[in-house]
Structures are given as structure tokens and as C-alpha cells.
Image (cartoon, one colour):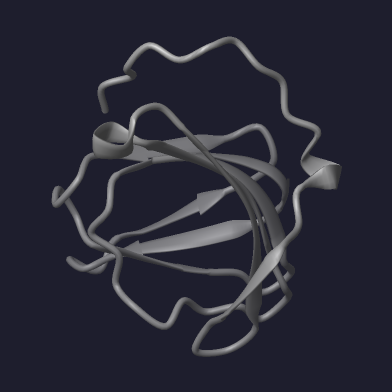
Length: 113
């Protein structure tokens, strides 16, 4: 990820409207902001997964993901599974390892991609 120059700013996430994204089961609610030029935007999200959420796809996009609340299970296409608890993060590059997220209890995440 290349961060092009953009002005300093703050975000009050409670004022960003959430959009709903259904999973295979459960739902994800995204509060999304974009920073930078059109050709190289950085997407920053506060994401909440409902209990029982399972993503409806294998994701190849790179992310830096930080778990704020709950518990997140991430399965890689090769079968390995990783569990994030509050205060833990993962990072993966674009097209490096396809992954799928799920949570039994629900989770709140901060994601940059």
C-alpha cells in the first residue's frame, strides 16, 4: 500500500453511516472512509460482524486488520485457521493468501486496505 499525500484529518466513526453487507450467514456493518487520490485511494473501515457471521466469499484483497472487540476466525484457502482476540491484528498483501472470515460471538474490527 502506498500512501499518497493527503491532509491531516480526524474521523468520528459514530457519525459515519453504516452500510449493511450480508454474509453467507449473519451480517457485516461497514463504516467506510476513503483517503488519497482517485487512482490510489486507501479504504479505512470500522466493521462490525454480527454473531454467526460467515463471509460469502474468499477474499484476495490485502488488509491490515485490528480486532477491537469480540473474536474473529480467519481461514486461509490452504486450511490454516487463525483466531484474533481484542488487541490482536493480522496483515496480508494483495493476492498473497485468500482468506475467509467468520465469528461465532461477533467482532468489531478496524481495517485498512
